[in-house]
Image 1: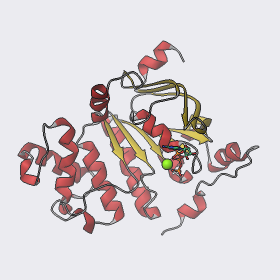
Image 2 (image 1 turned 90 degrees about the vertical axis):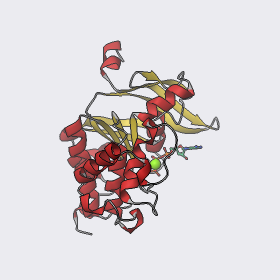
Image 3 (image 1 turned 45 degrees about the horizontal axis):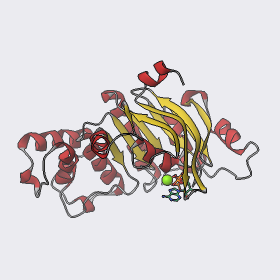
Image 4 (image 1 turned 90 degrees about the horizontal axis):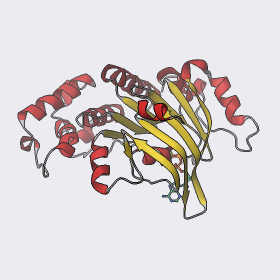
Length: 271
Ligand SMILES: Nc1ncnc2c1ncn2[C@@H]1O[C@H](COP(=O)(O)OP(=O)(O)OP(=O)(O)O)[C@@H](O)[C@H]1O
Ligand SMILES: [Mg+2]
């Protein structure tokens, strides 16, 4: 990887290998860079290393060897304080949304600003009116302006994931990481949430790296697809150059393990 490639990227992994307990391979010699504004999808069967890769980008894991640099910070050598500051610029979206169910939608969204506030906040009124207005704007953006004062656990799964996106936006992140963000949703909600993420990253020129199992969504939303198998990159290509057959071909070519991504035909049907 050249120095100019590294400098132009917001995320850069250089020959990263991660071994757990000295024997389980999480990542194997992974090298790639992500330029600002790119929507990058990680594909791969269960255990391929998608979550491990995302955790390296967020600084939760350190590589066994190789180098991870995110927003100019070398994740391995950074002190805990620097890593905390880095994580403030990285929004994380989870499969299970991770909202506080008994709190209002608006308070959940406001809590996304905690990283830039001093001390904890208890109750909606503990947030300034400026922050509450900002949170309402994000709720408006994700299409939930009328649900602000509803308990979060009364929303549907798709709505809860949209609240989680609004909460991540409160961080004003430069990077969004999403680990299987639509795995718990029905196909229509999944399409809606991925489309929303796609629009938001384009509007705000954010960088998004998301793991997905749904091949058709990856092909329709992503700028780039990175395919992992047993911790190694086996595919790295612009999404527009791929179709479902070519992706499956790469995966199944000579592999003893059949690919277990969800096939497009299954997802295309209304659920
Ligand atoms: N903390 C850990 N300790 C030991 N092994 C781990 C740890 N985290 C991940 N692994 C191993 O690393 C490999 C990659 O796991 P990872 O969770 O990244 O896969 P994944 O692609 O996210 O799978 P899934 O689609 O099921 O979420 C697996 O073999 C897993 O068992
Ligand atoms: Mg995972």
